[in-house]
Length: 317
Image 1 (cartoon, helix red, strand yellow):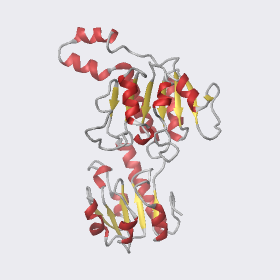
Image 2 (image 1 turned 180 degrees about the vertical axis):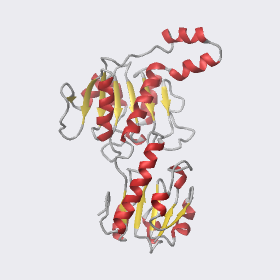
Image 3 (image 1 turned 135 degrees about the horizontal axis):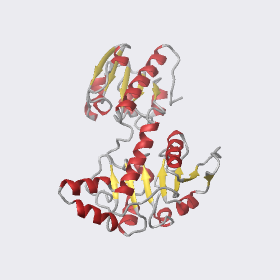
Image 4 (image 1 turned 30 degrees about the horizontal axis):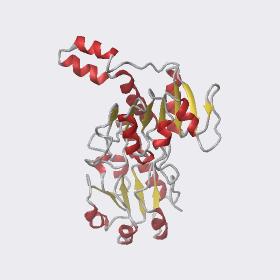
């Protein structure tokens, strides 16, 4: 079996092993593949494994040998799954591999907004120890999370893990989910508008789809406390970026921490790049070495199960 990885460097820059996949066939790895070379590089592949490469109907139509697409990801919007089904191609993703590391990233963003660790560190490195103390009481006041309210939008595995971390810090938990959830004693499931109104921190953990695209807009942001923080480690498109930039710049909310943007990497006109009181990271919440090692292992298990006629984590019909 010919297996081709088209953008391996996004998952493994060289610090983890490809061995789980090497045992399953003739493996060819490309660090990255521009769109115009996808067909050429995958023309002899029985199985293609991708992270962010777009597998459109036209691309799949040009690859008659292709029978399997494996994803180094949970999301599969880069693949036309309807076309894959039509062409007899199985598509498998990897759920749950990075639950803990994404939850950790959400709190890393939040704690930076609360404690300004980087700003204080940089001042001390510039021999401004006393100035670092002064800004703690003025432009960079610390924000205590104990007793505050954490609102979680989307209560899947990551949302539940974030709730656990919040409880450990003494936070009260509000949850918004389309479906009724069994919650620990003291937690509340509320309407979305109520969650935004009552929360000191809102953390987004829902999928991006037609219902959630730009879910967080001017109207919802206007309901937040002017001291509240917004955290997003899910998908950038859930937020209307111009509305969030306006809310930050005009003091409607206290700050935001985002690991995801609508366009990645962002273009020069992205309104959030120079917004006030924002912390940005380059969609790395999933990318701890431990999580990536799990990811490669599960991708290999998916492919092996498909080879044995028992596909797992299949996302198309």
